[in-house]
Image (cartoon, rainbow, N blue to C red; front, side, top):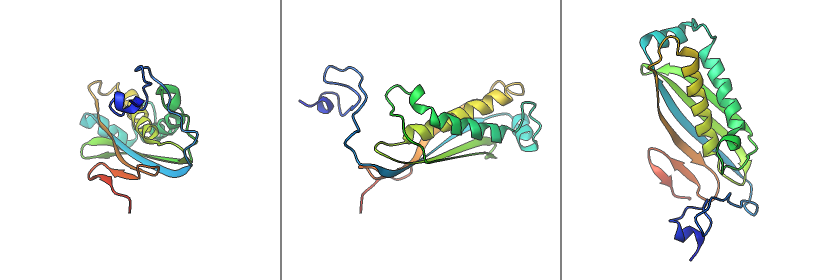
Length: 169
């Protein structure tokens, strides 16, 4: 019985159920991209302060973007079984939409393993930064809806949140 079948396809467990880092050494480098999003639900006072640039700690959007970029590069330091991945590009957008702060991160790399965790980490760090910078206005903010929207590349191909896995052509 293989490790994967014994543990329901979980590749990060050895045959005894102990955590392990998957060996990706033999996998080819391929272009990879992941897009994630998240939301910060906040009071209208917070949204107004962000949009008018009157948050006392500074420009929330720019600082949150920088936090997301920085966190992307440190993902393997925070997530125990993540490989360090050479990041080619990171874009983090932060803006007020639908009466909430919306964060979208897009991460690209040419490497042997996926970068979904890097995109999700970027969104998480950006959302926490929004909270930190605005908590004096509203401690009741909620970080919600952090999810992967899309991933491309590697053996599993393309996956989109709205449609599920897209077959390779």
